[in-house]
Every structure is written in structure tokens, then in C-alpha cells.
Length: 298
Ligand code: NAD
Image (cartoon, protein in one colour):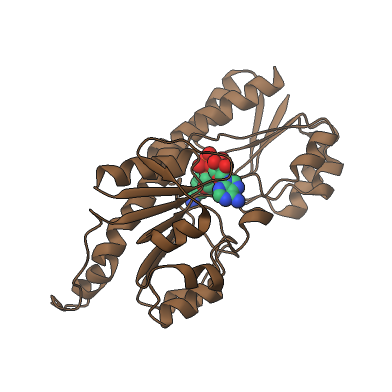
């Protein structure tokens, strides 16, 4: 049995797979062309988000039994097509929950207190006490769009910070210290809004000019979920107009996103899709990937 590792994966996971008697070929920089050429001889492939597993690759994967995705979202894989060919598609859904929930919680405080902007100012040799007057999150209302694993994780942490929590989720209606409301009501009542939904038809540009119009003046928006759920042009205009006080973004409509116009605005802070990027989450993803590979090939 042979497994092709297509994206950077925890070395310990590769050791565990090899110890189970499976041949591991580690090609974390494999190109789409090289992948199409190599895939026929493999029984399993491991990807993160970089490698796309589309129809042409699946069509060439004559021996493939499983595609293992280290992470949550499966948008880089043609899942239904793979399944129709008898290929299992497995992911590691809860391995990064804490990491992403902590990043979103960090952004709540970073936005409220302008921490990245103050740091840049200090590094520039300035002492700008008046420019960076902030607000407290305690006593404010957080709207969580998508009350799944990560959304509820953020809710728990924000509740501990003294926030009132609203949530909207068409499939979830219970959660500790959470008031479930309609999406419109969430937009109208929240001081901070955080998105934790997959990018599907129903969530495409769920935050757009129309929904922003409904929001409180001076609202803060956080997206550590998926790109494509915010209309980035609308967000840009709303920040320029002062309607939205600031935004923290980890995900973008197009990735990698370099030189995005949103980053020309002082009110925008963010990161390069690194929500799951903690030592602990990477180790957990690695462990679950290894178990998925071994399970699928045994
Ligand atoms: P989850 O499946 O547990 O939660 C997603 C929730 O969204 C579900 O409860 C679902 O009912 C809800 N939902 C579906 N359609 C909706 C709609 N139209 N409106 C509102 N809610 C809707 O997933 P999770 O583990 O909590 O992950 C949440 C998101 O975070 C996913 O998109 C995932 O890809 C993303 N994620 C990002 C990173 C990162 O690095 N930034 C890492 C891991 C996960």
C-alpha cells in the first residue's frame, strides 16, 4: 500500500503511517501536473488546503481508496465525484476547533484595543496615547454566525469575557449562554459579528452591503471561517464610510490573498488563513490524519 502526502504534514504522522507498514511518499510541493502523473500508483492521498483534488485527478486515480484531508473544509476536493468512484473522503473535523476559536477571540480584543496598530506605531518610534483609545468587549454583544464547533467555542470564550452572545444557525438551536435569533436580528443587535460558516450557496456573501446596512454603526466584523462569505468590496466601502469600525480577517474570497485593498485600511487587521496554525492543532491534525490513513487502508 502506498500513500502520497501532497501537502505539508506533521512528520510524526508520516512515521506512524510508515510504522503501520504503509509506504509513504512525501511530496509536499507537488504541482497539479505532477499529481495527475503520479496518482495512478497510489492507494491513498493526504492533502491540506493547497492541493486541489478535482475530477481529472480522480479520473486518473485508478487504485485510490481514500483521500484524507488534514483540516475541516472539503472545498478543495470534488467529494461527491470521489465517492461515486468508491473513494472515501475523510477529514479531521475537530482537530483545529480550539486553535480557530482562540484566534477569533484574540481578534475580538485586538479590534477593541487596536493592538496591532498600536504595535506598529510603537515600532515606528511613536508614543500615540490619544490615537488608540479603545472600547471594552465586556458588556457588548457578540453575534456568532454558524454555531458549530468553532462558533460555540468562540461563544464560550466571549461569554467568559463578559459578552452577551447571539447566534444564528439554521441547523443548531441550542448552546450554553447563547440566545438564538434570526440572521437579521443578529445583524441589528450585535456590536461584534464573527463568522464560522462553510462557504456554500446559502452563505455566499452572507455579509454584503444590504446586511451591513442593517448593522449598528461602528460594528466590528471577524471572519475566521471561509472566504466568500463576505462581499469584500462592500466591506471596504463600509469601513471607508465609517459604518464598520474595523474588521479582522483570516480568510479571503481568493487565496493566497496578497496586497488586498482591504489592507490599505488602518481598520483592517488579519492573518494569512492561519486559524489552525498552532503547534497543538497541527499535532492533533497529524494524529487524526495518520489514523484515517491506517484505518482506510487496513
Ligand atoms: P461546523 O460544521 O461544526 O460548524 C459550521 C456551522 O455552520 C454548522 O453548525 C452549520 O449548521 C452552520 N451553517 C450551515 N449553513 C449555515 C447558514 N446558512 N447560516 C448559518 N450557519 C450555517 O464547522 P466548524 O468546525 O465549526 O468550522 C466552521 C468554519 O471554520 C468552516 O467553514 C471551516 O472550514 C472553517 N475553518 C477555518 C479554519 C481557519 O484556518 N481559518 C480552520 C478550521 C475551520
